[in-house]
Image (cartoon, rainbow, N blue to C red; front, side, top):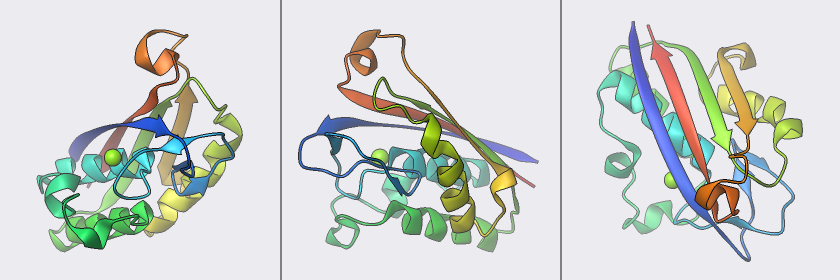
Length: 155
Ligand code: MG
């Protein structure tokens, strides 16, 4: 059994779609980033790579590479997952916490679980997504951006 942890944060920006866990969420701002800035997919990718000891998302998909400009992060997650499988590991479970003051993400977590599980060729029961606020504290509380923590278990 191997466990990996992933963390990601992105700043809110005007004129961008808000995409989290592969789901487009209605909001007045999106997240800044080279790809689609899906911080949930990025944190989960890092958790999987960490569990397998295969580095991190920046090493696999450098943000200096134009191929990943506006990339669909679910596809990056899927590609990282396939590398993990190639290395001889089996995906068991992932647990994710999104920390965002706005928008309210609760209504979207089931769909995120479905989309993330799909990228891992797995069932939604093996992916858990939770959302919480930062109680108004600090940069997350002020709505400057969001953070995501993910844990992945491989067998
Ligand atoms: Mg990121």
